[in-house]
Image 1: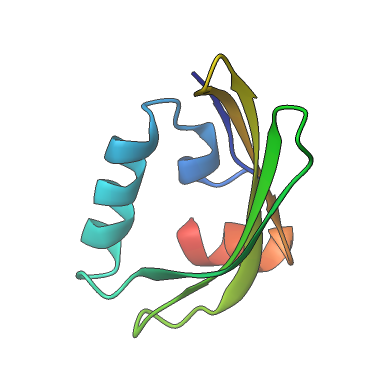
Image 2: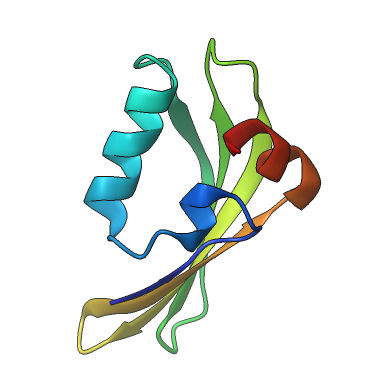
Length: 93
């Protein structure tokens, strides 16, 4: 699966997959990282957009989205979009 993250911070360069990424986010924020799902939009042609707020006691709250491509009932690619790439890069670097 392709996994493209916004920005130039260490997390955006990681291509280890979603499980390893979220484990790392939890470790870097002492377990306070949360992604609160706000809404999901679909187009009926194999695309979904999930909007969420990344937050926690770690000092960041930023709105992001994940754009997913679905083929044969499975997610094949995920691309992240973020409200503020610079803020995200500074926090995660």
